[in-house]
Length: 275
Image 1 (spheres, rainbow, N blue to C red):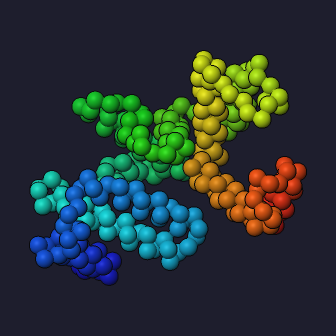
Image 2: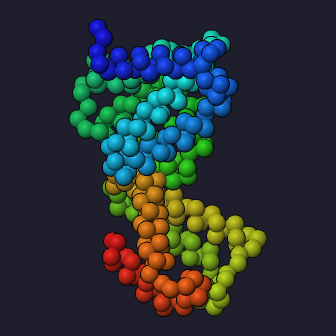
Image 3: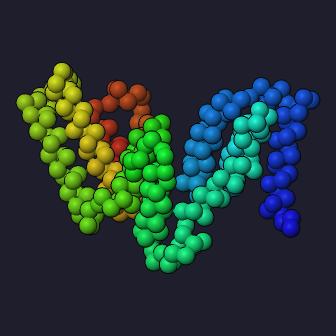
């Protein structure tokens, strides 16, 4: 039975088909599955930004753009018999049913989100042992993910497999531990003695490693308390940019002409006004 939802998707697919006909759009005809990959990333980030702005109109538009890109990829692939929208939809539908035995199978309903995640990871673990090369719990994480996003997903997978602190306190203490190791790595360098501090050789490598461990521990702690580290960092960047732009607008002349006390006072005022 046709519904407004299914009809809207069918209309979109028909439009995409028309774009790929010989008399269709030259730009769309030129595209390949590979060339469209970058638009998945671009539209995905634009969608995330619209969601985080809580702009429903922009979110709707960006969702549509992403749907268009996905539909075009499926259409292009179908022309050479690689796959199509139907196969993609069937594949994910089968996966949804398989990985939700507490909804579609004979397993008892999950009591909470953690139990549901454990069910999901248990099914994935069975799938990994079914003739696949990479049987790690961490298999399947794209290396191209932004580092903080990948850290958050890595933590989720590790927690789902049972590798977790009993409480968030353990994850927080890991931040404290990593900060201490970073301090140790920087021993012998007086950060107050010079405007610029440069590390070289083995010390540079160690400081870099410890800084990375601190960032990762912070990302892991975020996941333990339900905060997406990538989103938290994006929000912090937006706050910084808003405050910085406000500070620029309030000060006369170039920032390089101001002393530190003036800059800090202007920054404090921007922070107080903008939050």
